[in-house]
Image (cartoon, rainbow, N blue to C red; front, side):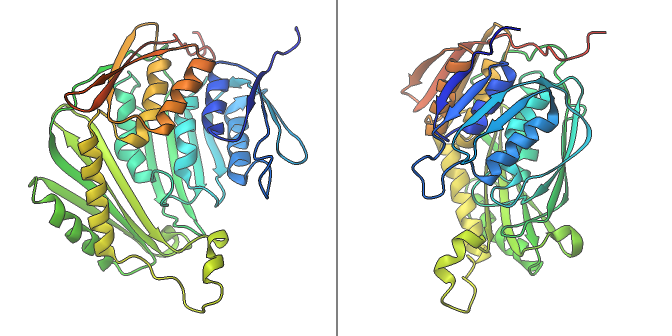
Length: 380
């Protein structure tokens, strides 16, 4: 056992992605100056929770955080996976924040992963669990992930600020490697599907959101079906809230999604309302419906085979493929997508060829995968 060589990184941004890449490429990392100049320095509670979650699904990984939380030393272990795991995601970020890293880590585990996550299921910051179920999981199909065992079950909903939601995520392991994707054809939109959720509010709110959203969509396309998911009692979580997630399916099988959630602000955002006795007004359901419809139309207009929130995951999947050429088309590159490309070149040494396509205002990216194999899998 030689001396461990750590890769040195600075700053708190994209910690989630760096952890995933460090774990998959078995690179020990030291992250310094995590919000060192902030009024409350160090790791946030959701980041610590993510570290705990990585510890749960792997064996023999070491995490050291200094007293102020501004320096983190992480040495990855072997990804195990496993059944009947439970993790409380806390209330500072929603479950969506934890799902993307979990899916990637689950694919390269020793055993298939089945985990129950508790916390906030829908909020306005992270992708909602509905979008994950309808869009993100289907993206994995393109890269040869088996569909058996890939599922996300929403047991109960939880809106901010108090959460109370529970979901069960099942991720199968990759047979050996992913398969490279040639995914450039975006097609035309042929149908729009969606689901509204409402917890601890009037059941009518779902229908009002649908009515407003359909008012926008029906001008362009007749095939619009949006379902309602109204929860009351224990499965509704602890806070009132409502929201809607819509997905456009194209003729070539691409899924473009948008979602939004309306709920009362969290405790740390409540300060501006402390003087007044009344609660802040929530956005009316009609406006929510129109807002999400225009968000989706905007995402479709951008072009590309995935929407802007899924760019990072798409690039990661391409980079984890066997040494074969993957080619994908996306709309405008988001800052998150660009940062992902940088992290991929740091950890996996994969460089993308980026070629703008001026006729459609999209970008085509090509890369040769890093040949990530599932090494922790049992060899029978």
